[in-house]
Image (tube, rainbow, N blue to C red):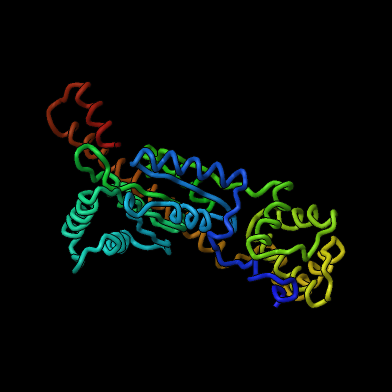
Amino acid sequence: MYEDHFGLSERPFQLTPDPKYWFDSATHRKAMAYLGYGLAQGEGFIVITGDIGAGKTTLVGHLTARIDPANLRVISLVSSAIEADDLLRVVANGLGVSDVPRNKADLLAAIERGLNAVARTGRRTLLIVDEAQALPLPALEELRMLSNFQAGGKALLQIFLLGQPEFRERLHGSYSLEQLRQRVIALHHLEPMGEEEVADYIGHRLQVAGWQGQPDFAEDAFPLLYRATDGVPRRVNQLMGRVMLHAAIAGTTLIDAALIEEVQADAARDLPSASAPPAGSATIADEGILAERIAALEARIAEQDAALRRVLTLLVDWVENEPVPLASRLEAVRGAAA
């Protein structure tokens, strides 16, 4: 609707990620530099995290649009708490494996054959996993194992993980992910745009959509837009979409702080659920994050419990059988606890 009023070819502030609207903010430029470095290494894991709406999916779209398919085969996966075996089947399908085996050993062998087939064409394989924070621990461990496949001393698979901030916390805080953590060759957290970038971001999107000078913006508009959105791209798009529609309905071609405040007031009346939930309540998203963290903690406790049981078994064995040299005992304890 508002695009006709302002003579635009399309709506510039849609919420659906579109690589065409890529904006080279400072944090996204740095992320692309890390990605370029990581891809040049041709191995290991590249990890990009960011808050909801920070532009992770747009970043992936921009990256894949620049990748030459003659050099790199890309497999994309949006995680939804997918289990380990299902993740392996998705990878196999992405490699074009026909009649995907159900047996895990056969499935891994089929994936390795698929990776080698890609390598024989002179290409590498890149697996992109979005929403990585939803992956359970066994699935992450399978990804680590897949990264071990190699031929001629070169890795057959490189993995790009995108996730929300809790994935970064999980990666740094979980003992169970130590081996995966050691394989991360590039990591970056997408920050919100700075106040000075918001105006450039809005102008860029308008120009891509064919902006010819309408609407115009008052000087007091951009500081308010920044404060209202904290510089998060999706929030900027959401607010600007409402502002553009409101301006079109009102028949104005100037967007100023007063108009933005009116839109915010309307949104507060129309969307009461946008306010903070009562104390003690939890959203479905909160419950999902809590469940993931509990599951990760339980897995870590189980792992430590298993290590303790192995150590106790050795101690009992030493008491019941002949003495064992101290050096051998210490080495056995280290191995049991590992």
